Length: 136
Length: 490
Image (cartoon, rainbow over all chains, first blue to last red):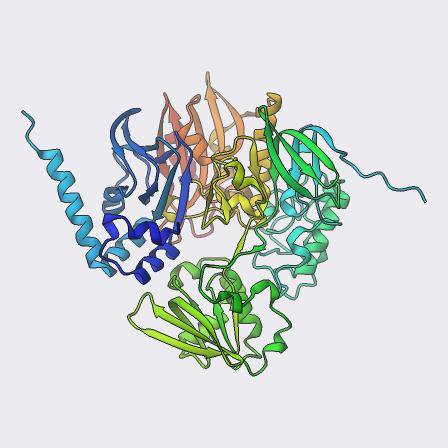
């Protein structure tokens, strides 16, 4: 399956046309990581934005898995948008295939595609609510 | 006359290298220096690989400067000469510049090919020519490569096959198009309307080649031309002329962002139906020729059936930082296909692994990695007397760091107050592997293209990053840098 066809199935890209998805797929590289490879590095500058096309990853703090990421999930957006280094590691749990969008290009993509920006904003809001939710 | 005995008969080897282009020659040379028992096989009849034929329009895009501010043949000179392979022997070093006619500071295809033949000859790199790799199987923890001459068993195979097999995108009707590799004499396009599918290297190259002949040229692909990225890429050196004409108003030359719905014959012409990707709408073209400049793939033969995972629509093997398949242990790649290891790609910056200047260093690092892995060979490690001076010199003039920005780094370990040179390794290996306290020097690029010298310090398992100030002449050996790095190291 081509990258554009995979993107078409992911919630984040649901509002974009096939031609727009082709442009995104052709403008960015995909990368594949072996299980155990680190993708995002805590404390180091210059991290990218990643969309998982295939496989699983884990958000890790000091080597301890805190959260699992699956196909269609994305990560690296906070450091890409704020310019600050990531506050956690992301490590491939299985073989992991991702679309890689460098930070400056993420900003341009969101400005060019407001529907994509809205999708991401909603997903970020849900993540924030899950984090803030009062635990009995 | 007695038949010349061909080297490397079928049998057991530690490593088998396939391919006699620059990647294969450099890998074999480096393996031999480290005393690794290996065979170098090639289906060709002579060295040179893709440069026997490509680029079609006969000029490379990577520089070699016959005269430079440093001595030809020195380590620093490698930064000024991106096309010669690496050697220790003076007679085998920096061979390309002497073969250039100086029409450009970019060698021609013929000059490059002559340089590779001269390297094989003077460095004494032998290959078994006329030996075609046909199939592969795994046996125990090794590999068996079946060839036209018989079977080769090995613990690791290094495929240096280039990325030169024509690849066509899945566009309906693209079979009516000639591929870039079948482009003929530019004069053949005199007075013709031409649509070029693709806006990467080969697309711009072919467009530039036929610009003086064709009546009109349209370059079309989904990816927008990113002028800021192109301005910093090697491509601009030769091939941006068609884009320049379009940007000034397009006198018969157009560069457009489209997906191609279909290509269909209309009489003796071809209709190309396209839809905008960065604009809304549809455009149809009727042209005399369509050229598919949709790129190339690595000739992987049966490796995907064995489970080799790829990127870029199956065109490139997906590799670990040491250029081993992420899915097939023992299967390594050298040469152009080593671009399948992207590295940490900080700020989206990629390595130069798709051209000779970058992959010649990959080959040397790979040879050392194979030596350590297969022979438990510990390469000699030299003590470093003045760690600050050493790191500053590496940042200023190490060709490995300057070519493979953000991919390769120079590592110095620290124990009991003394320092040891650990050599050049992939940066991600340094960042992600546990190890003794150490420093790594890396040359990186920021969002604006500014070159940033960077030091990483590993202490007690954690790694910290220190960016040094840029310098207009890229010299990091002055007092302010010495003071900064002394502070980092102490």
